[in-house]
Length: 165
Image (tube, rainbow, N blue to C red; front, side):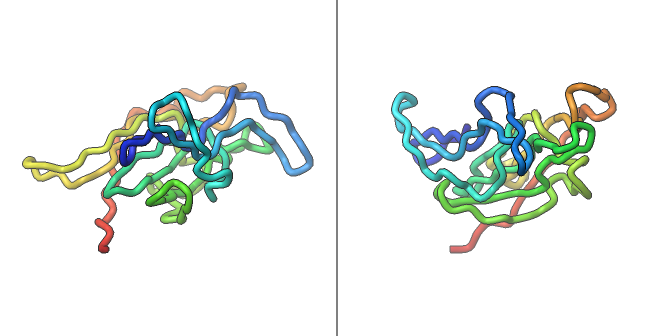
């Protein structure tokens, strides 16, 4: 969830965690982008945001732009990570652009986090630049074989250059 210009936005996520497996791999009940002015009535912003369906990711608004990153990737092999290694941006929630293929300096899908928390810092007198901070997260490929070494307790920050208009 994120807030922008008086609207609540639901950006991705899942409806349960029950996937079916088809010829192209797992098919999971995931949302796309919706918005609401009151939390009761929702309108579809886009049925296909460009980024792959995913739960466990984060979307924040920084410099009047949505940034979405991280998340759990649905693997075809339950013991090999398939986490989406991308960072997407949008000004309106409908049109999305791939910004980077490497949040957290990830070398591969095994380095991408899901189920982490994030916070926007708008900058201020202390000298901190406007940034998105991420806290903790999980990098496991499977819930069937948990590995505590892949549960993180670190903090990262991301400070994109402001967009020129």
